[in-house]
Length: 147
Length: 147
DNA sequence: TGACTCATGTCAGTATCCTGACATAGGTTG
DNA sequence: CAACCTATGTCAGGATACTGACATGAGTCA
Image (cartoon, rainbow over all chains, first blue to last red):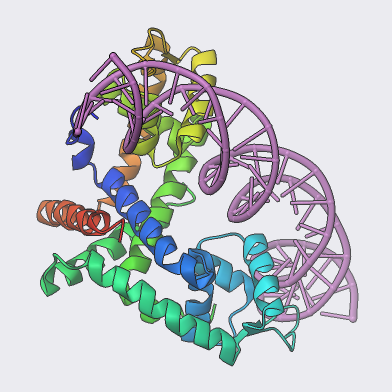
């Protein structure tokens, strides 16, 4: 262990990864008792906010590939949490079932408690500043993605 | 695609994941031509900042398991980027070779350019605020990790 | 209308990382 | 000193996500 505070603690990139990792661990922790993982939860949350998203759209929103999201959706459909009925062309719009919506509710509560814990030491001003900063970072990184 | 800006964009947790994902993608992009990935780079950077770190310490610093870091270190040792000589008890301190240090230099430059791009739209004040905010989040999440 | 381009859903194969388990070294406590 | 507990390095096995590739539907342009 030796020391704990080194130069790396002044790197925004490293801290970003560390924070994201800590958040992921905390979320997995509260979602495991509910039989969910982060991708599973993200998928349901996305569907709750925008009904009828396609497989590809969900994949982008959850930061996984189409293939990964596809196997997840197959499992969710098998478990009766979502339905994928009428193909619009080649696109398969997905919708939450009552069961899926119910599962999501418990998960949302669990995840919200984690978010509140994460924001505990921050003022409202700091929170909105954080939103602004993160949006700026994302925008700057995406812009020259193809550089 | 339909709309792009939804309610999810006000969730700090989601934006954190999005930013981290974008940063990871951008880093992988610039590291690939150098024959590195993010974990590989993180390992070398950690060793440059603190000589003689053990496998477990490196794993924690790079946010992977001991096993994953171990196979990476074996590969790095085989390629002559690091050395693991005198076992202190059971601990195997790792050190950078000149070759490893040289590879790291190029990688650091590449990664720094990504970080600068990420911070392009932010003032100095915003950057230090971001450091403060991320540290607070990490601290709050870690505190009750065993809850 | 026909050719072209792009995005989608899906299949197969592979790489990557993690979980579980074990023996061992170090430190602590009685 | 001995018994415990923790942390380390390592091995095997399995889960998870990704890359590559294919055929199909939608939109565009001549």
